Length: 263
Ligand SMILES: [Zn+2]
Image (tube, rainbow, N blue to C red):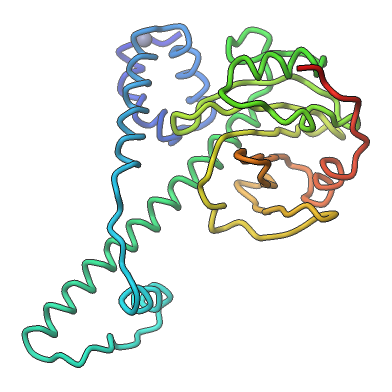
């Protein structure tokens, strides 16, 4: 177990999900058992949340159109009939707006990458009988209750009703300061992780739109893992696995659901 002084310098990278999964797991183990470091993590997460809530300046109309073209690499001149000094001012404003647009895009790109990195790191970490964040069980009823006691939302019971997959257990984790419920299954010797979180953020820009048996889905790949995403009410549900997208879809939306769970 590392000392607080070793851990402190790593916490910024930890909350930004910029560590390897082994490193992050070591930090997480310490944070879970150390109230002072966990308070420090809480304050970093609060600061991050505050920063992300700051209003972003908005470009509008023709200027936005122009910026989108600039971002796409189409160099069309700004259609402004002004010359001289005013032309320079308009060009300066356009340049500033471009910077705002690029940093906004970079910000949401970073948030998407953080979400993917965090899901993959958690997917790679098997459910442990020793971790306070984990419940190792094949009993879907008790896992459902355990997860719902630890989140501010109700995990859709359909996520626990896949009889083709062997239930390994669940975990409650924190992503960008929000509680996320995760469920781990095994199927064909491969792990399948499901994540449920309250999110109204748009789907990551890299994700492709798809449907399976009438279910609208988004599909992506991150560091060799396949990702499926869909919405259920206020919740964003993500599935992560080394299994192919098609196999995952079949299992999640075509499989035989087990009987209902009791609240
Ligand atoms: Zn500590």
